[in-house]
Structure formats: structure tokens, C-alpha cells
Image 1: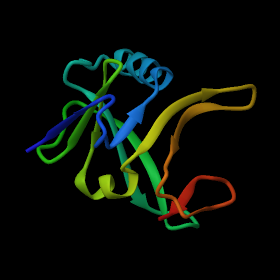
Image 2: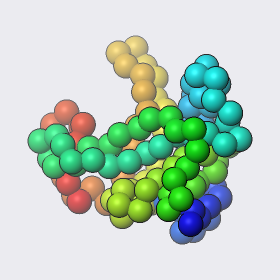
Image 3: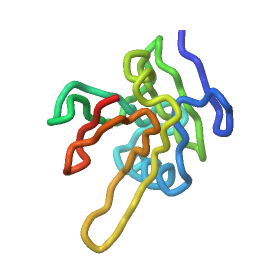
Amino acid sequence: MSTTADSGSPSETVRVTEDAAEQALSLLDGEGLDTDVAGLRLFVQQGGCAGLSYGMRFDDAPEEDDTIVESHGLRVFVDPASEQYIAGSELDYESGLQAAGFDVTNPNVEAECGCGESFRT
């Protein structure tokens, strides 16, 4: 059974900035996905020099046990195993002269690798 957390909820799994939502919605639309059903999956996987790393992909629909966060028109899907690592995080989109991309600010991180690609809680 999926649960939904609206933006601004105190028990929110992940906060999504307006910039991140706009960028993700644009990409979803470019892939021809229905943004009323499809969304961005944010997950944690084993890997990297610090032990865990973030992953993101587009999914046509949430899985049955996902938490669904809806913010600025974007649906973000988080599976139960990943939720324990990213609860309270913020998803943002940053662009600059050298790079552009999605960035996760996670209050649960105890240590990160030097390149910032992996973390430990």
C-alpha cells in the first residue's frame, strides 16, 4: 500500500525544491511520460567508496509499497528500504558553469567520500 506525503508535511520523506521539480517535470515530459501518474524514483544503493550512493530514474508508476511525495506538480517515489536513509532530505537542481544536475542534501549523512558521490549514515 503506497502512502502519500504532501510538500510541507512534517513527516515528509524528501522535500523537493521548485527548481528540481521544474527540471524533472520537463525531463518527464520530454520522455513522453504522463506526469499525473509517472514520477521520479529516488533511491539508495550499495556502492561508492563511502558505502552508499543515490540513484534516480523515471518510473511509469509507483510500486505498491512506495511512499509518494508530491511537490510542485512532481511525484517522487521512494521505496521503504531507501526511505530510512533519506528521510528529511532535500532534492534540488543546481546549474553552474562547470556542471548541472540534481543534488540531495541529506541530514542523515555522517560521512561522504571526497567527490561527494557516496555517503555513510
